[in-house]
Image 1 (cartoon, rainbow, N blue to C red):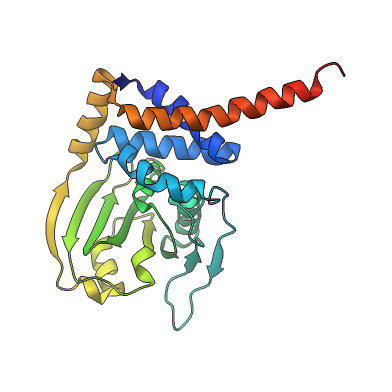
Image 2: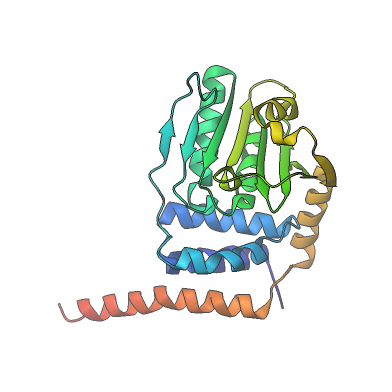
Length: 252
């Protein structure tokens, strides 16, 4: 089956509400998943894998831990406390943008962050705000690296094959924002010596993501029936809760 962008976004909003997301969080999460799917980055598949974890009591936005830069840590470090980027990605990117405006550039490391792919939608938002931005993370022997120029709508995405990184950094996300053009990869490589011998294995240009998005708008978004059925079950939680609340107030 195929659905439109609006249909997918509406279904995701209700599904995340059924999972227990707050209003602002489910609006952001729906936008992230929709964008990731429409740009060809398999947002629905990634969400399907993440649902059991999120549904196991991990649907509340965390209070992010913050450690200031010092002699041992040249960049500020945030702790997402095991949360999905669906719940903390917006705040992380907003913070990076704010610090970049104040200090001209900033590099943040976010530890204990899951489903980091979804934060790419927020990265594209930083580019549209007129900032140079980049984001990177390790997963299964690869390092994903996304960059976007000031005023751009879609990032370039590269994957590098590298040696597996030791915990806890395998769940970390690196985010760079600047008010001026900089060599983000050079800064990233300096921060992570593990990337010195990395070999590029895949690259997606901004035009590729843009074309995939345009095709999704025109042709619709392929929706696996099992995933849609899961959305229906999650949405039913909201409907049941509303019905019970309505009955409780009847006749007063």
